[in-house]
Picture 1 (spheres, rainbow, N blue to C red):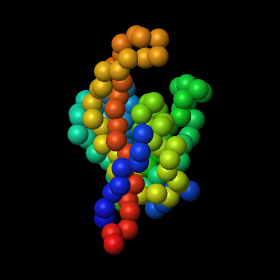
Picture 2 (cartoon, helix red, strand yellow; picture 1 turned 90 degrees about the vertical axis):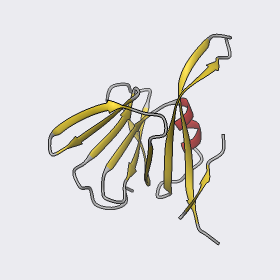
Picture 3 (tube, rainbow, N blue to C red; picture 1 turned 135 degrees about the horizontal axis):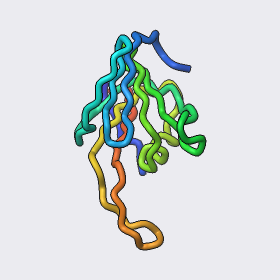
Length: 127
C-alpha cells in the first residue's frame, strides 16, 4: 500500500485497546490498565479515519479517531497541524500519521511558539 501526503463510521471491531496521543504523551489503555510514555518524534500510527468527536475536557476542541487494523482505537488530540490536514480527508480513508516532534513557529502577532507537528498521509491505490 502506498501513502500520499495530504497537503498543507468506525471500521472494524474494537479489541479493547485504546491509544491516545495527547500533550506530548502516548497513553495506552488495555484491559483496564493504563501506561504512559513520551510521544517521540517519528512515532507513526496507521488506521482507518473514523472522524472527529468532541473533546470531553474542552468543548472547543476535537479528538480525531482512527481504527487500527487490529481493532485498536487511536485517539489524537486536536492540534492546528492535525486540524488543517484532517480537514482534507474523508471518514473511511486509510491514513498514516507521523509525529515529527515540536516545531518552532512565529504567530501572526510575532510571538514565538512551539507547536506539535504531524504529517498525515492517505493511502492511494498502487498503479
